Image (cartoon, rainbow, N blue to C red; front, side, top):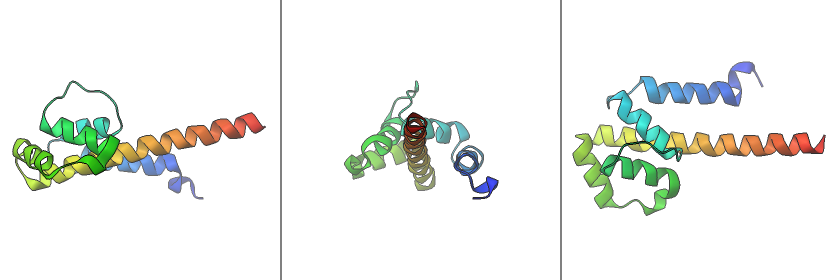
Length: 110
């Protein structure tokens, strides 16, 4: 695997995309990323609730929650970016946890 294709490099590129691109305000995308990764923030309200639920149990998200978040975000595009940012945050948090477990198991076996 080339160095540029390492998990760390790919994860950094995903984090950069969440932080640096999009039409929704950067702080909104960063909060959604953090909440998706199950990190607590001071944010409250429909957008924060949606991002946290996407990260923990996305199958429980309702149309009403998406509608409320859309009203707060102001557009479908911003709402999509919230959901995408939360999803990326959740995915990277899970991948990082799995990588740590594999590394610990490998170290213990050595």
